Length: 59
Image (tube, rainbow, N blue to C red; front, side):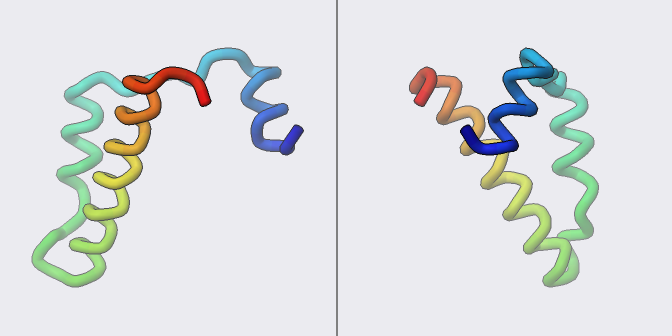
Protein backbone atom coordinates (compact mmCIF):
# COMPACT_ATOMS: atom_id res chain seq x y z
CA UNK A 1 0.00 0.00 0.00
CA UNK A 2 1.37 3.42 -0.89
CA UNK A 3 2.19 5.77 2.01
CA UNK A 4 -0.42 8.23 0.71
CA UNK A 5 -3.22 5.67 0.81
CA UNK A 6 -2.10 4.44 4.24
CA UNK A 7 -2.36 7.98 5.66
CA UNK A 8 -5.81 8.42 4.11
CA UNK A 9 -7.06 5.13 5.52
CA UNK A 10 -5.69 5.96 8.98
CA UNK A 11 -7.30 9.40 9.01
CA UNK A 12 -10.67 8.27 7.72
CA UNK A 13 -12.76 10.30 5.30
CA UNK A 14 -11.19 13.31 3.68
CA UNK A 15 -13.17 16.47 4.44
CA UNK A 16 -14.83 18.19 1.51
CA UNK A 17 -15.21 21.82 0.49
CA UNK A 18 -18.54 23.59 0.30
CA UNK A 19 -19.53 25.20 -3.02
CA UNK A 20 -18.69 28.67 -1.73
CA UNK A 21 -15.22 27.47 -0.71
CA UNK A 22 -14.62 25.92 -4.13
CA UNK A 23 -15.79 29.11 -5.84
CA UNK A 24 -13.44 31.16 -3.66
CA UNK A 25 -10.54 28.82 -4.43
CA UNK A 26 -11.19 29.02 -8.18
CA UNK A 27 -11.42 32.82 -7.99
CA UNK A 28 -7.96 33.10 -6.40
CA UNK A 29 -5.64 32.82 -9.45
CA UNK A 30 -5.15 36.05 -11.40
CA UNK A 31 -6.14 34.83 -14.85
CA UNK A 32 -4.82 37.99 -16.53
CA UNK A 33 -1.35 36.45 -16.32
CA UNK A 34 -0.05 33.16 -17.76
CA UNK A 35 0.78 31.77 -14.31
CA UNK A 36 -2.72 32.56 -13.09
CA UNK A 37 -4.22 30.87 -16.16
CA UNK A 38 -2.04 27.83 -15.46
CA UNK A 39 -3.03 27.73 -11.79
CA UNK A 40 -6.72 28.09 -12.64
CA UNK A 41 -6.50 25.29 -15.21
CA UNK A 42 -4.79 22.99 -12.70
CA UNK A 43 -7.34 23.71 -9.98
CA UNK A 44 -10.20 23.13 -12.41
CA UNK A 45 -8.61 19.88 -13.63
CA UNK A 46 -8.25 18.61 -10.06
CA UNK A 47 -11.80 19.62 -9.19
CA UNK A 48 -13.23 17.90 -12.28
CA UNK A 49 -11.13 14.79 -11.61
CA UNK A 50 -12.52 14.43 -8.11
CA UNK A 51 -16.08 14.91 -9.37
CA UNK A 52 -15.50 12.14 -11.93
CA UNK A 53 -14.16 9.82 -9.24
CA UNK A 54 -17.21 10.40 -7.06
CA UNK A 55 -19.60 9.77 -9.96
CA UNK A 56 -17.89 6.55 -11.02
CA UNK A 57 -17.44 5.11 -7.53
CA UNK A 58 -14.33 3.65 -5.92
CA UNK A 59 -11.47 2.55 -8.11
